[in-house]
Image 1 (cartoon, rainbow, N blue to C red):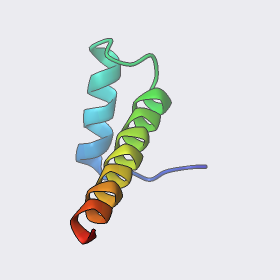
Image 2 (spheres, rainbow, N blue to C red):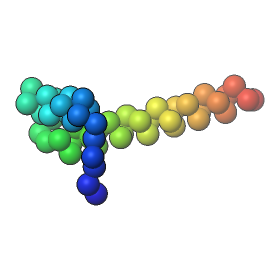
Image 3 (cartoon, rainbow, N blue to C red):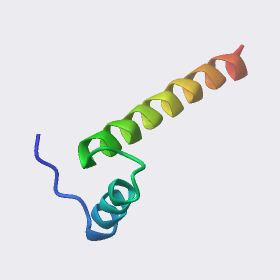
Amino acid sequence: MNLNLPNEVNDYVKGLVSQGRFDSEEAAIVEGIRLLRNREQLRGEIQKVSNS
């Protein structure tokens, strides 16, 4: 998959890698997707509890 990220996002990801926070740009993007997935799962769980 090829991604065309907005310049500010691209710069942010490159900065994370240059700071040593991630080994690669791909690793940073994968972690972001994992966090998004976890947030959405949590949101779904909260909604289930709220509707009970």
